[in-house]
Length: 185
Picture 1 (cartoon, rainbow, N blue to C red):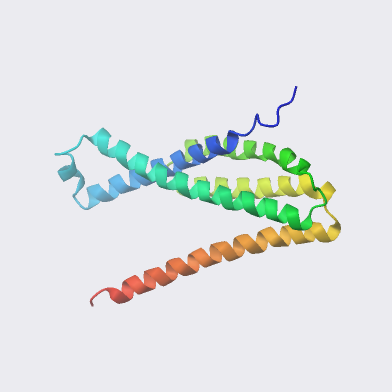
Picture 2 (cartoon, rainbow, N blue to C red):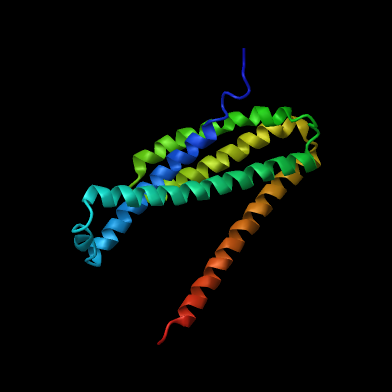
């Protein structure tokens, strides 16, 4: 008997694994910066070294967990919206078929824990896995799409994520520039 909900927990596991990988890296970088600025030895007078590391790891992992959860929510919404606009599947059978794609994220999340010292590798793993998932998504939905629907679904996702990332970069640059202008020189 095949249960459609058996893969329901995989996105949560993938988010936890990636949050841990990024959290470990950020924790080690914060510790390095604290030592560089001479603050770490002062902190050791009040807290244990393991306590500082655990707290920083927990906070960094929590921030990344919230980030990846938000991205997952947006991605799921965009997938269902694109299926509404372009798919001939009105009953959601394709959504059940593409759930298996979260296995890709779980496997790459496990792999990312091996490369926590190399943030570029972890980020590249995430991006490559996202590309593989998108190809898997298009492959699984292809049977319910017309040729125009296939072009539409690809264009919809590429344009949305491009605009979304571009907006975030723009806001960060504006914030950075306003911060620099506010500094007394």
